[in-house]
Image (cartoon, rainbow, N blue to C red; front, side, top):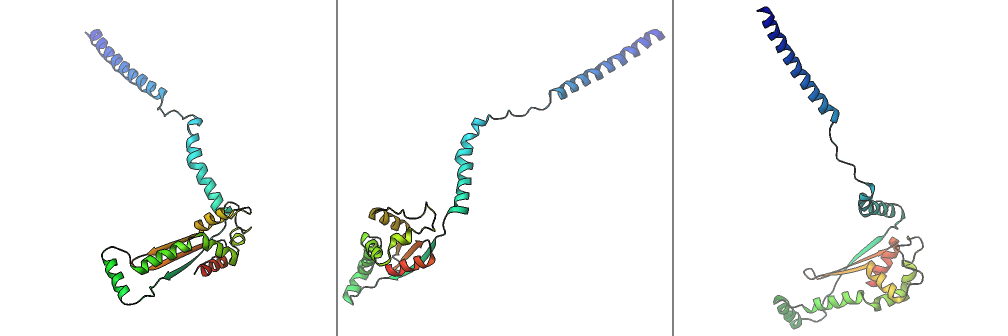
Length: 193
């Protein structure tokens, strides 16, 4: 009887040892494979990100941080009043109330158009020499007016540096002038007014 029961106990221990061994083998084989990581992307797939995002940010930072010339803005405001009296103002008020423009608004738009006209650029060129002011050699090459600029180039450059906005509610014309020196911006703004 003892031999049979010893066999039974020994078989049970062998089975338990066998199960433990199987678990260890299974766990060991899982650890042997290791965790899976996503595959690295090839370098050529990173190029669009580098050229379309990183490079423009770096180039812009370098340009605006170390190369770009300072720009100064002179700001002035004008108001246009009608020289006509009484009935004209009453009529203008009625027209303005129904959605039309008042005589002073019309005159303000005329002033705005004149400030942004080629005639104004010609007047400023003869009085201040805009080519010299905007072609300042201290300004960076990309921002300044080229030495061989035509009259049309000067006019386009002027339009990029001068802004005029008429606020119909306050009847005030805002004029902003950019230049590469504060004194130049003030001189141009005073000459416009």
